[in-house]
Image (cartoon, rainbow, N blue to C red; front, side, top):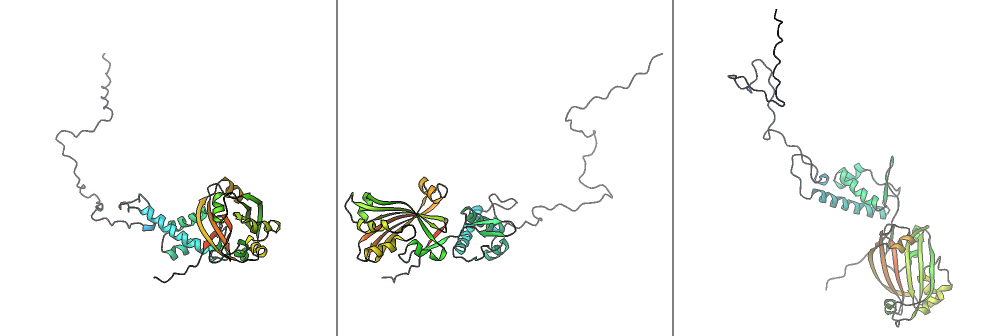
Length: 313
């Protein structure tokens, strides 16, 4: 008796086989079957409502979304943030926030008519300068005030900042030295002549504020060496010992980066921003007697002046 044979195994389909339509079958129709529920037609580019573009101050490059990337959007926002930071910096320096707390972000957004990201970018600029800091639960607070240094009158540092605290001087060097050629020329002295050199670190309430390098005509500077240079301004001492008032001064101001010496003395990072003031002061007779090179910490002091406009000729 013959045994039953098993049915033949189906031929396996090749991998990734594409299903075929039986011969003579109609292609599938996009029409729904009778009685089947229908779905609303999808929105097309013509019917879809375009999304609102972002605020121009808050745009980034590239801007996500179907709208085209505004050219220079990130640059424009950075410029807007920089302008806001300048206004806030001036308010901080002028003491507009006596409690030391800046307005909250919502207030700043409304005041400047901009966005949260732009305001935060502006505050970040001030934070990088060490002028403000973010304190959880309080907001943005002033951490280091800048002191205004007026350029309208010829005054010493203690006279200028007496309303802000005590100015003390760390005398690092004092005595006669050979005048560098440029110093001798500015003081109307012969090349190689002796001058009195005084180097001081000026502190306001204990904080290093400036590094002063002073060159004095010998007859004016020598009497100062026995005076209290740690607590008194050189200007006042010159007038006391010389019998003359100081008259006018020629001043130039420029920005430099702190070198290794200034960095160590002023307690700032190497490369930090400094304001360098070169000041040549004259007696009331017109004679130049005091040439100073002063490096001020850029994060602690700002130069201010009120300058009238002369009538056009």
